[in-house]
Length: 301
Image (cartoon, rainbow, N blue to C red):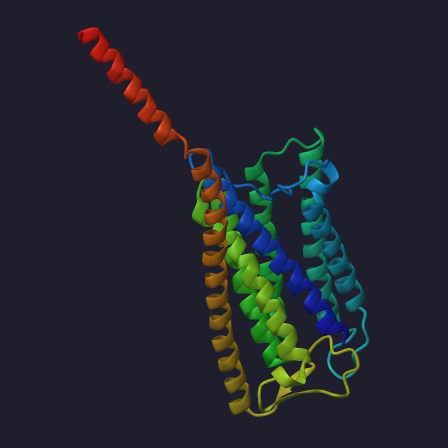
């Protein structure tokens, strides 16, 4: 039960973060395309209070700290049937906890940089930090996938590693080209996709209705922290992997729809405001032309 609750928390956090970043990115670009420049994190745009302005960053740091504590405590969970307290599982979970703690430190340093003059780091440096951390997450997930005893969890970790590699690439591009709007949209989309895949991982590993046919949970594993879902036959294992590949494509389609819908809604909102501020220009121009024509006719007379 604890496993699916953690996956739901992580999924909702990543989805909210990715969607928030997409909205702010589109808003920042559409308001002034010529002066657009990517930002690692956008303050809350509808608040003048300094604390409320950075509320999304506070919530992100809180979720990162909770995830760090969860991974740290999980590393010592007893699991006598599979790996439990063996060095392999212990160090894999500690590796994930260390990556999460680094994300927390970078978020904290960005908050200090935004609110004080102690760390006057430029945005491209934080994108470089983000690229390095996403690459570390890719490495941790890929290493975990290579030693998993559960074929389903190994596949889920492998896909998660590839999404993190994509996010790392987007951050690296933004560190070098901060005005590349497509790269920032790609970063927000990758975060949304990671959130959807974390949700799919929790459903495929811990919820009986979503476990592929021919696979089952091991009832003797109390904690269910690793290797708790098994596929006995090779045919069932291959079928389960193929299903996860198909589900991943469906999640990619959802993310594409989310990106297009988000951009369209933000464009409609920002575009309405821009058009509304320029509606009087044609009438003013007509009046000016009329006055100039009258002055010209008076001069000729």
